[in-house]
Length: 385
Image 1 (cartoon, rainbow, N blue to C red):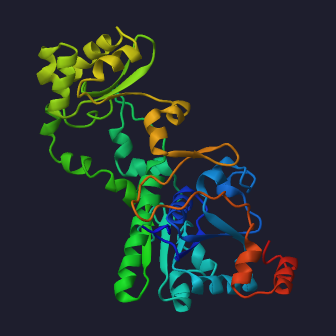
Image 2 (image 1 turned 30 degrees about the vertical axis):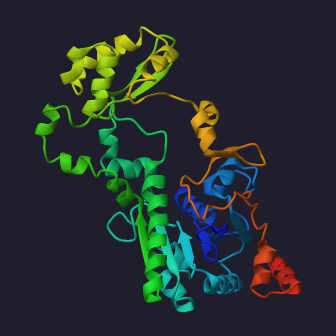
Image 3 (image 1 turned 180 degrees about the vertical axis):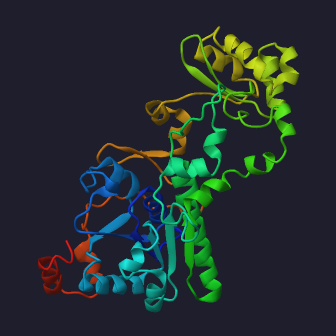
């Protein structure tokens, strides 16, 4: 058993400035990497006028297990110091639109000359190639183009936004982490780093692994398998309100689970109608006859996948989530999800507070060999803060 986290000894330079890259580098930090967040001396976090301190909930949510250096890359001296940091790094993550890093003199071809082993990951909305590469965008734009919002329709046919940033997290941050780890493994064989082009549109499209091929088989719609199957048209997979105005999620997609549900509510005639939209009203009427807790008590001894809809406060108090230690509270009282995977031998590191901007500037510069006199001069010149 080792107490060191899996990425102990690796260094990551974080030039991401929005959710996907910041979350990816935070997870790399959770896994033990030394994440150095490179920030301009003056900048608003995420385009929002919020203080760049650990008390900022946005900053606290995305920057644990990182160190911060405030360094002006628009100055010659700042770029020189940055190149020295690149020479010490294993990974660099940036989240600008295509072309920005080149204007800073920090594109992959330049940095590779300083460190050929560098794994350089660019996260952008549409990728580094293609006609949309320079377009602005946000999560709903990527989900719309990937066809996913069109699938997320209420029974009346109206598409709805999601309450989470699926493209940013599932299409940007997670693919970035996975491909960075893969590139580090490849480097063990080749000795060379490489460039990773992570496009959130591509990542969102990967979530259409089910719908894209099924879209070519329109007859499945007649069988109840198609748009709406997961968004309210199927009685076996739906959300129902109880008599006390709480809600329950029924997830009985497989025949064995739907059978268990029908048997538990003594409705054998419903067995062949798992995907019949016309049955939804009858199931809803049944759930409206009893309270949430009464239904949960009835279903508890049965093999029926049914769960209450929890708000964020309920989530923190859920006994299973508490037993797994899935949430921790930081020094400011904010609750956060822990790294979501359990390791048997090399667990993720314990969370450290999000840094204030430039909090470790002096420490990082001393690691590069600069003296206190040198650092004071750089600060006077506005190169660091």
